[in-house]
Image (cartoon, rainbow, N blue to C red; front, top):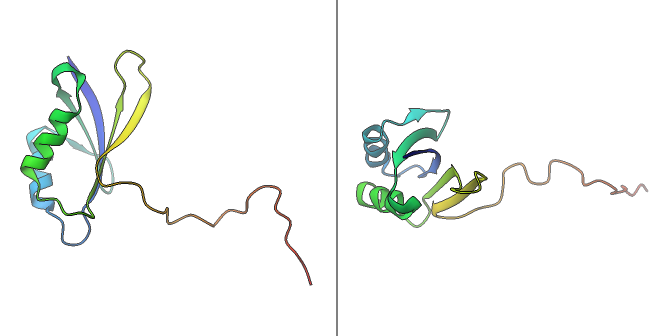
Length: 107
């Protein structure tokens, strides 16, 4: 059975986009906006390790590259996300909203 996946990627300025785009094209991925793609894939035993291995074999990754996969968990059908490479960093919108209940001091 094929499963649906969304992939978000940030390879920076010098990333191996050619390698990633070749892999995305090989799995028939559809463009979904800047740095986001959708694809379906048959994965053995429900393991995401096969996707991670395919990407690692196809793309020259650096320590700062980030690839995030979104999918529905088998059995529960809950939407899940996981970094295959890299990790979370500070959001560019952090600090824009005032937390509720915060009173500004006035002089």
